[in-house]
Image 1 (cartoon, rainbow, N blue to C red):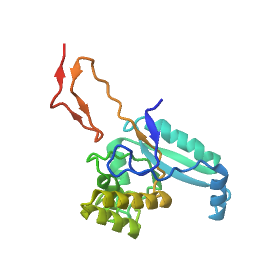
Image 2: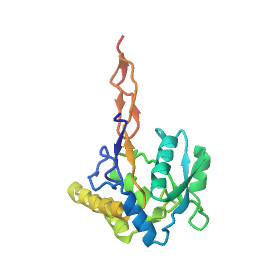
Image 3: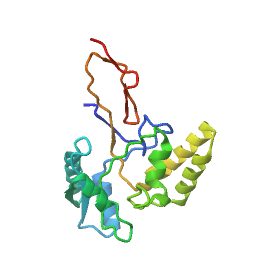
Length: 210
């Protein structure tokens, strides 16, 4: 019903630096072929950890993913955790981390691509130092994100982020699902409330018009 948008980049359109890259096709036969080539012709079993009540329809989405993967021969067990427990469990260092897959959302609260990309995909941000919980590392992506941090020309900076996002999407360290629309209910008499793309509500200039 328009509450979410299929992701075509690691960050959403409301974030500065966003650029359309690609989407992942749903191809069951191709998945089976790749599994067979990797030596799993009879299928594979994995566990995905996910929170409940943290994101819009997070538990039903995890169940839908489970059903789709089953069609391709991937048996995915769901492990549902309360949010604080989930963060602690998925945030262990690489030598202690037992997570095979996890579901996580990310709000780019600065409104800038740096926060949405560096925090999640630069190798210096491997958990627990940062939020790179998939332990992704690509030297080319690292270099582009570092260069973009120091670039003052907006056009050049945006091009660096576009290049980095193209690489990230092709590497597929995550399966990028969707971005949520920010739905806010406001009474008719409330005027001037700003619902910002950074997930903040700004009431500095809000008033009641009764």
